[in-house]
Image (cartoon, rainbow, N blue to C red):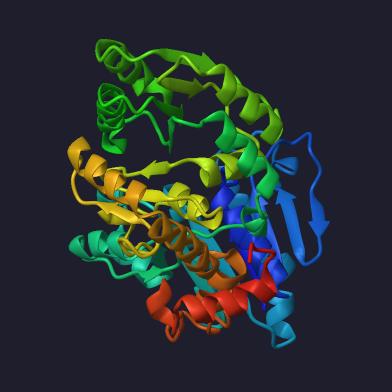
Length: 421
């Protein structure tokens, strides 16, 4: 198989998928409108192309109009002449025109039935402005979760689930020494983590209400928070000040795990520590592993990537019900059915007494996450795609697509990934 992945903005999801396909032995080409000053490169079976090298000022329309004919001439036709199969994957609203053009050119050349085309969306936002009927006839529509599939069905659109995944680095074990050192710095405190956009649906105000109540109960909480989409950050901080919380803002830079431990030590007098930039991967995994609770409880998560990443690090995740793709309450995470802080406090009090159960949930969380490593998702949902759109066959997304369970995933994952025993 040869895969052509087209992403105007070069999304991390598509990059990780490309890497997973390459690791599965498939020749994979990733195309984006990247920085024209940076070179294209090859890593194993993955080819990374920055198309803007050829079109210096290409917008979305030019990206599609110029790239698609080039792909057909350079890659699709030569492979079809040799009897080989190509699959093309585009994503989100900016990929619709690409799909339409590719479908039209292939039909005009009499080649459409020999190329598999997929179009992916993570959101139903703006779908009313898409010609869904034409899109469904041009490509197999995919989305990230069963929750999103139901939303699209409500709009009269059928789709196939290809969930988000994790790269192999997400399973790098957190050194026990670092975990113990962080635990020593938060002795007697409750360490909470929340990483999400600063928007209302992410339930930031409920998270701050949890912190305020823990403080009232004398539990000395520390919430480490990092957000994107800063338009709502001012409102969140204003609410924190109004609740009497002690707030600090810090830019951790790329300080690593040692820097994180030092940062927590310096936050002794704070209730809320806001990070001005993202932690590096090692520090992020340590924070997930060492926290007493990871709040991944947004009111609507098409696919809760932060929760899954925390589970891979053996974090204790408090998730919203919309993360049903991979969460089973009290087995591999704790599910919050409402936005009421009192619900979290009840579950947290129970977990604080059930130390053995909490440890078992952390282990089960990591086993579950192995089903969402990108190589697993690729094998489950994309290999082998059929050579024609009319008969395209893609396995169902999520654990329901094939037999799953802790024993199976642990055995397979332990061989494939470097995970903690």
